[in-house]
Amino acid sequence: MRSTTFAVNSTDAVHVYSDDHHIWLQLRRNVATEQDIGKPSFKVAMNLNVGIAEKLGNELLRLAISQKERQKLNARSAKENKGKKGQVNAAA
Image 1 (tube, rainbow, N blue to C red):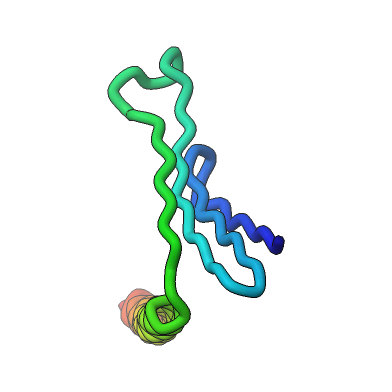
Image 2 (image 1 turned 30 degrees about the horizontal axis):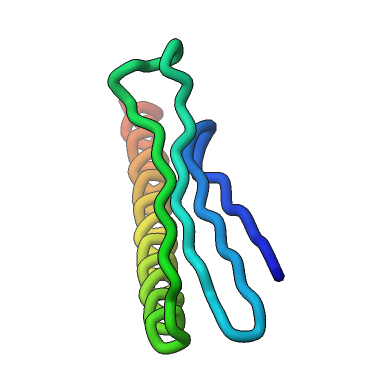
């Protein structure tokens, strides 16, 4: 069995387990009650068929690429705006 863990933050993780015939996706949140009584811990898992696993993977990849492109555009715009402000300040 293959196991891969993707830590989301200090309390949340996505675990992917697989063998030759199965793919399991498990979402976990582990929060100590003393740390935050209002934030529940949980563990949920589901067995994905190959078609759903492929669709989920493609959707996540499409979203990640889209967000990455938007972040690059926003960073470029912020850099250009910062440069323009510097030019205005230098001219004043």
